[in-house]
Image 1 (tube, one colour):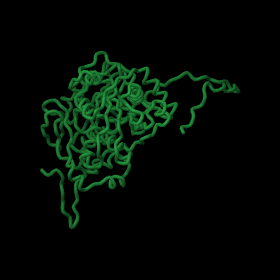
Image 2: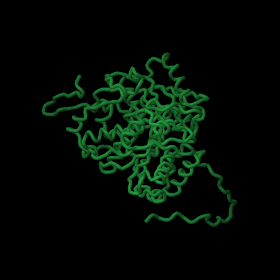
Image 3: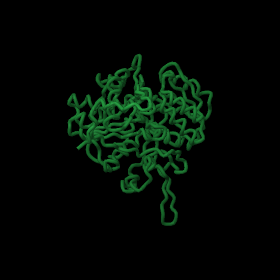
Image 4: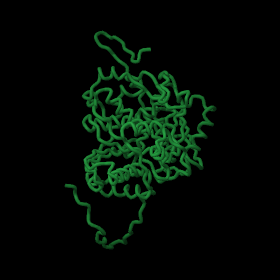
Length: 428
């Protein structure tokens, strides 16, 4: 089977929308057909989408990309949806890459950037994976999607399933942010809460699926296309920096799909010849209350062990054992990066600090990345000259309880008290 369908029409060659060729096991290398619904490899490992990059390199240039609409589908040759008419979109992608001059100066990393995913549909980076995953599922004939979630992924997949006319079955911990319960319900999902963690939710989904023909298990890395949506963050960082790469990229790792995807994207870009030089050092950030990947990195292990009694205010990274942990560790070690655990108290302080200094109310998972940069600079692992990109994976508005404060109430006619501190100075 040809990797790319071509039809000769007069003097024009028309090619398909995607250069997808096949799926490949991330551990044993077994090849799978991409034209049918696939889960994991027979060895239990995640499957990765592969593309005809030689054809893409011959047909598409960064200049061509620049002239396309500002969404993640601008990279459609390197995404798995084979027909443009199959794309399910709410306008996701091309989120801003913001300079953080005041925060960077305070931390000692003047060239500090933030990729702000809080502006995506549904308010988190999960929309990227949902857009591509739902689009491909619908293209392959899936009629319903089912997943366990810590909240935000379920909200995103429920919304995109509704957009595509698919059914959705979502199970999440009862302790997940309440806004994500409401988002799933509003999108018409079949929603259940479990008094436990995401692994408990996963067991419920696994038990339910045999009785639901037409549904696909879209749990983290149990289907191959969520990763493809997430990887576009890596493409965008390179494009927004003028097709060059920063020294370091810092990412909050729960299931790890984002950091695995960014690593995949950067390698694809280098294979295309659109970037060159060393890849950025990738940093996986976890909370000290749930840090299995950090522990595995420190011990030199190839994969992590389940984390007991996992808990953190950064709920999105409360993943005691990730299916793709070995891929996260490969990405970190392969780029000369590291893995860092941060305390809840410190990340909450940095969540407020970035809002005060830069005006961005970010999610606790994104704040954990800022705390990690602070720690790495203090330890000397980061140099003042390093150009660093942190990923804010969602809007702080999805966690209102974490930033709630007691506000003084004035009676009509009461004077406003004198300011308690000096105003923030403008950066030079």
